[in-house]
Length: 165
Image (tube, rainbow, N blue to C red; front, side, top):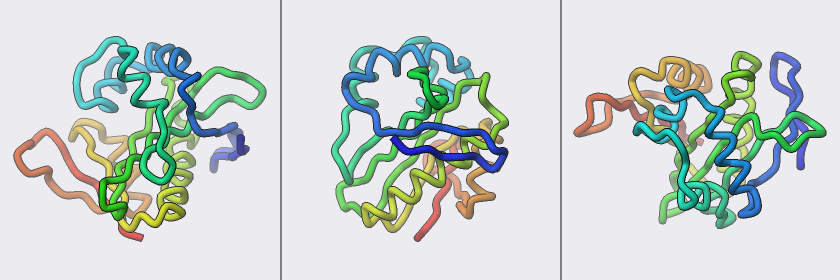
């Protein structure tokens, strides 16, 4: 577990997810707003299935990993960042979710920085995020972090954000 501090001075304990976290991940996504769940999964889901929780908590180092953020000294997940590399190992996609009670504290910035650093460590050359065009907060954050935006071919509701290292 590592300790991170957001630009707002908020402290987080962050560690990789393990299969033992599946139930806690389901509980976390139950607390995430309906809109944020839709933004994260790009579909309307009310509750994660066991299979979805397994996908999030399974890991393959240097290919797929989810980082869970906690309040220090607790086991309550307040945010999650998933990093998944493609088969070439050159491009990875990142997806971040934050409990609504903890938004506005710089957690998204901090987890995006952490995921980007991990991607660089894996040898990733390009980091991507696919966002709903309605997710203005994520698009703004990623642009401020140096991501460029372009349309997703064949789906006018989505935008691809990309940052090269």
